[in-house]
Length: 233
Image (cartoon, rainbow, N blue to C red):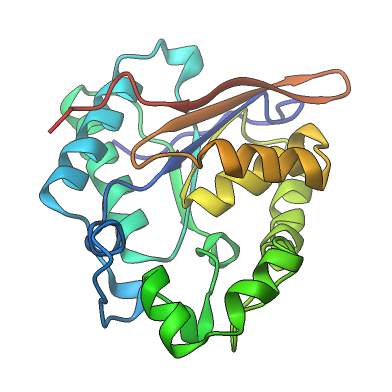
């Protein structure tokens, strides 16, 4: 099968965003363990692979008029592995495959010298940084890193491209929790205060599905951080 797309559609009607499955860095961070690795090369755990497969099964069960016809994927290994496992399930179910592109703007927030450091290590090595972040959570840039506002700025181009896309009706983005969060801000016109409240309540989990439906004045959230399809272990 080859990827398909409709011609001359009005605009993107449905947008899906999937956070990658559990990664080795996710496990290390939860255990307050330091991991030394290039962020782009961090892969999925066994559970992360099962989560990605479950996401693929969820998409494979959709009606044809709900399946994505375009996939935009983060360049990071954990996101690309997630998409590959989703695609595998679509192939197994003999579903039409969407066109697939790696979009360099969808990489995870770059935390510079703080990348993959658990909080105790940050407090030990960079004692001034936690207070700086607390004063401006969205604008704070770690040493050699980028702020959450920087993430939002590079996503503006992605959202603008979606608004101008007249060849695809349903788009799937496979990326990271920060990407999902700031897609919500841009698509739903959320304030910084609302974004911080969402972050405090908990970011999108590994293998979760978020979706929006186009309306006359933008996009309306359909589901956020949906995890009912995921395996428990």
